[in-house]
Image (cartoon, rainbow, N blue to C red; front, side, top):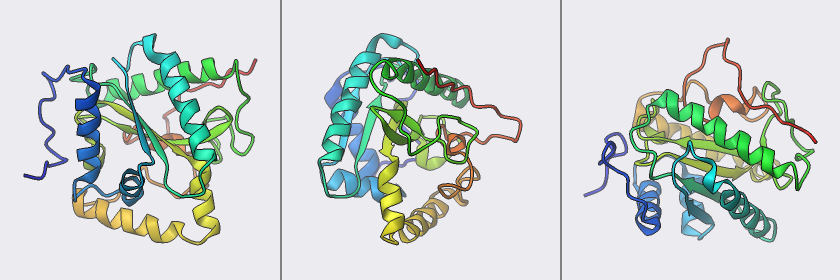
Length: 235
């Protein structure tokens, strides 16, 4: 039976830390025929979707390992001529988080990773480090990333994965698609599939460059008074 994205199983009692189980669950989530993101499906099919299984999203104990996982991913991505690369960090110990808690811990982890990264690399100069800027993007190893947060209780059906997770998508690959005039086609396909799944387009979803992408990271719906908690701390 094909799993239903909108009714994830074993949410509250799911504290499994077996990396193989968590990775397989994520692959099944992406492969589900109703999952809307065709870019993620392409990355998985090409073996360009890399995964790392951490512990709890609120805990800093895995931050260095996560950082080096992303560094290795960046090296692989930069040495590839093919499109569609993503890296996913899964937190299977963080069961039962509501949407607000997940959003808080998402920015906590991104802040911690950024603070560690700044000791090794500058911010990607192709994007802004200011989260209110329409050119903002998260940066590690001088590579900009568009972050997709997944959690069991997301208000968006397409974001409801069994475990909390952070997906790192290299920002530049979307810019390359725009240059090749492929971005709009992919965007329209994803949005049609999202409407079929959820009945509407994500109200936080904007085209790259129209507004800050920080509004899209967690999957939550924000009002105009929301202030992103991320602060880049340059050395």
